[in-house]
Length: 180
Image 1 (tube, rainbow, N blue to C red):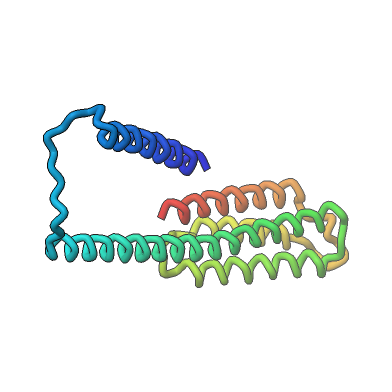
Image 2 (cartoon, helix red, strand yellow; image 1 turned 60 degrees about the vertical axis):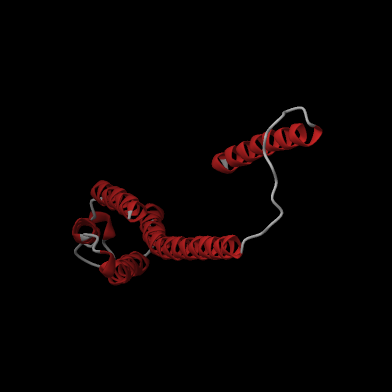
């Protein structure tokens, strides 16, 4: 928004200056020895047409390329955000004392989302081994209990710490994707 406002102000100032100069020239306030030739050379018309066409094509191509890249990044970032939401729902299930099946479903969903992200990002050459390692730490801690009814033996502070580490790693990965 700030950049657009600056460009509008600069354009307005330039427009005002050009209007003043043209007004002074037309009213004879500034005396010049310019002469105007009303002959239009064909090479000038060709030059203007070619320059305008190339400018429009380059602007269109660059805009299209940038918007496509941004769209791809937004898709990947939305995958990372869904991983973060899944982690938060899993932690919420722990805090609410939900059934073991719900917690396991959340962890399974988290695993599926990370695998999908890994397949999506494979062409970008971004190393996500740290993200995977953080997930497996969380997985081993979150599923460390003896029976399906006895989820009280889970070290909840460790699960929360590993979840936080995973969320931090997700946010670092978002930064890496945005810097590409």
